[in-house]
Image (cartoon, rainbow, N blue to C red):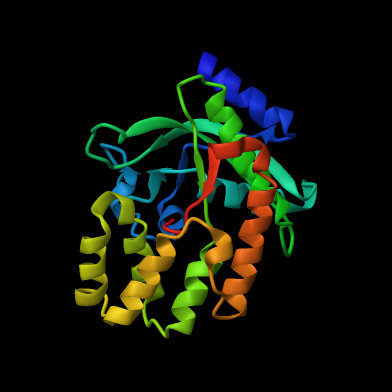
Length: 247
């Protein structure tokens, strides 16, 4: 509880308000998030259904706060002041095999900013700063936040005419865990990239210095400028924040 109090204090210092949403949601609503979440969802059904009641599961426990937040904003849209800055500290449940770093039930401390039409880029820096301060407040050792902008990698893949950018980003996200050699093999053998395409993507994913990146199109240029803005606004964190284009 002491840790949660410290995290809550950081959230509220930045002007975020607390909301609480139901643990149970409609299954079809939760599953609509996509991203291969079916294996993470715990469904609910009564042991003894009433006569004539369908045996198909209709309800489920939420596995993160995204769907509950979206429903909350939709239901209260006319009552909220935007940008709407909220935090939630609630239990979530995931269909995991319990192991180090993976649990079936845990408390998620979540912050989001919702706005109408578009969200000012300075909130990207604010959220990263909040995350750093919240973890640092727990006094558990060195903290480092890694920041990226997906427009950079997506822009490069667009310039390279990559046919399945979603598959590429999914594997690039595992670069540090699996290693460059294995990811390069997967990108060529399983995703279908040419040797030149795979090399260009991996070279960008390994880059940590933004000035060294050559923008191939407007999307890349916009992503670089946005990420540089965020990094400039996080200079007060020193080595506590780095640009990492592999995420």
